[in-house]
Image (cartoon, rainbow, N blue to C red):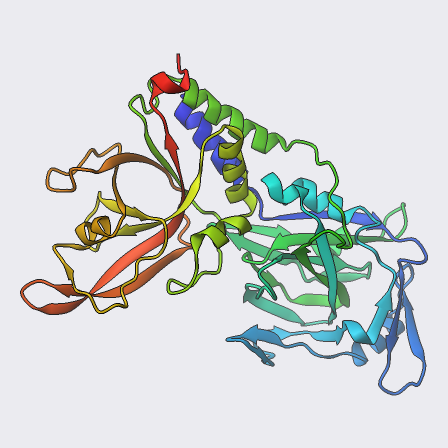
Length: 415
């Protein structure tokens, strides 16, 4: 296998399964849940070490129909989500993700790079009950702040069938059978958990029988004083292989012998607004494989930057890298082509190294080697006023990418 193929494989391996799972034993304290019933003055109790059908049915009757977010509103639509919910203020549990080691699992298996060293704040959000026929169609969670990076769903041990979680990310589909994960075993009752990033599409398949009961927690990157303090995390072997294979490329005298740029498409979706977002803010929230690539470059003393990559409608091998989104709202006409306009505005024209420079393109264009994962999560389209024989509306197509400048082989000690 060539060095380039080896790194490509390592990069694809880094774009790992976008969730992590596990299970924990429930002791008598963690298995007990208290809740308010609408027709009772006192608190009701369910012991999930031995939950009965009667107790679970009573819990479901104390819940309300579950809504979901759509266009910044809570929507009730049982053709899309049929489930029950109870707000955190209406129940109490001593289930503790930190004390049970769940956050350590999240740190080791989900977070990458410097993100794995940050404190995590866990916020209990809701209890959900999925009875027979309940489901939640495919959706993406809405982050409740710019520090929220994911969700933790704890499946409490109840006898049920169906209700598996499906995840879809980067064209791949994964299934987590929660009913099997909490099935009775000789070690006693165990709760299963799954943690995943906020941008990962997921759905709950219909429950066939029984009651599927879950606790949902919001996961945030915290500050000093959060309910989790960062601990030392062992090196991730996937990240280590990624770094080693890229270092091998840098040591090869035939890899970008004269130097050049390397670009990485992003494997996760990030919120941005072309009119107001600064890329220097977005780069601090990179996660998963994106954070792994960023960390790899930093550890190799390279200087990765997040760029806006523009391409015109007709230019197939000429792109423009910008440090921030272009401002097309000032009423200025774009004359002489989009690439020329963006270059004059401070952009860097690049071309795919494997295709060579365009004979009619910018004389200042430099080669770039793209590592594309097929992701189109961070693409966008902007309008501008184009002027040729007459004024028309033009369209600039772009995406966000990580870019690193590779020095010539001679100056990086390649041999």
